[in-house]
Image 1 (cartoon, helix red, strand yellow):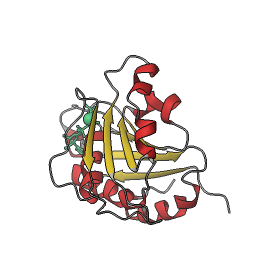
Image 2: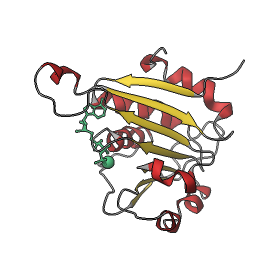
Image 3: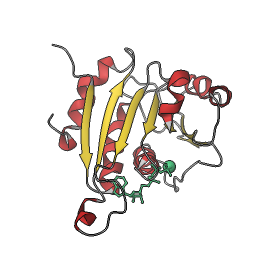
Image 4: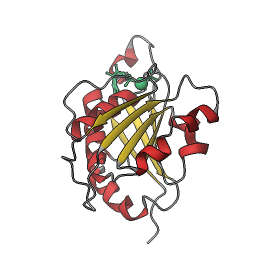
Length: 187
Ligand SMILES: Nc1ncnc2c1ncn2[C@@H]1O[C@H](COP(=O)(O)OP(=O)(O)OP(=O)(O)O)[C@@H](O)[C@H]1O
Ligand SMILES: [Mg+2]
């Protein structure tokens, strides 16, 4: 049976987006790179907060826009399904970088090989450098932002389209679809 190439979920609050991230996090193994795309304020950092919380990070997770990469040690407390513990969460934001060379210089590719998982905001920009084997997650606000009046109730809606590159996620794809079932959008 062929697998669908994308999984689409929807959320109606920031906390729900954190819950989606929290469902994905336990499936991650060292070396994984998750590329987060979406407009300003679409929820990339919010996703990272839920992801980190699920990995046992108790402190605040804030936007790494100026620091470029934040590193959170996980103390080996979280066991990945294959038994290799995730040692580190890397949270990067490449919005301010001008060239692919600068993204290469962050060294995320090497860092994840040493027991880390990486979340990269504006990851679509980093795709040529980090895309192979990555999970891509694009957040869309269907109604855009700021239109007052009737659309107010819809401001918190987000659609997340999840795709994969290469075979790295192939064995986990059915499981991913299963855990995201509660938020799945039928297409
Ligand atoms: N369903 C939702 N999912 C995620 N965030 C939501 C949702 N509904 C409302 N929000 C709000 O939208 C904002 C998302 O901000 P966040 O910093 O996560 O976006 P971002 O994509 O990281 O932005 P930037 O591009 O500036 O880094 C937060 O204020 C959050 O509370
Ligand atoms: Mg952000």
